[in-house]
Length: 222
Image (cartoon, rainbow, N blue to C red; front, side, top):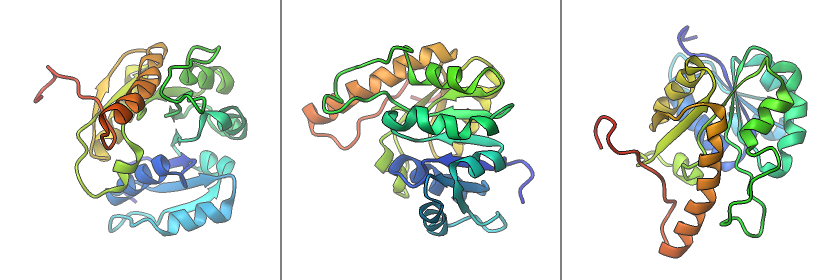
């Protein structure tokens, strides 16, 4: 097992975003555990992944078991299931980086910004998991279906977290997935990326584009 790569649990890893991240991270040698409310479904999704030579074979598990066995937990679930899934994994998140990708979309008007009473999904996750969980928010503005393709993605990933060291962990994951991570400040700032997702959905519709993303200029090569 590569000693420099943490084991990553992807909760909701059978969905488009989760499975796309799992595919890309497994391909570069990260030990991957797919978490799902249905273990059989998680095992089938894990079996479809191709791991880098020498890396552990991806495996599937329940959400709670996946979180328990991981070093880093990535939450890729719909807003409608957010609270329930957080309750499932909470006993296994103390001391761990938990990457929340959730956007508070409220159908049918998903192109309209509709923020929750907690201000953002990321802040809601930190409140529900407690202060021992190291919540970082990221991967809001990348088109999930593009992660499924074996090609570069022209999109930056804004990474929010109260501890720069935790943000750095997620920046490394973003780069391993073929994206550029950008330090974007404390967790409270995640509301900007969550809201921007609805804006991008509207842009996709208005301009008939296949998954608009964002690019921060003035950092390195534009």
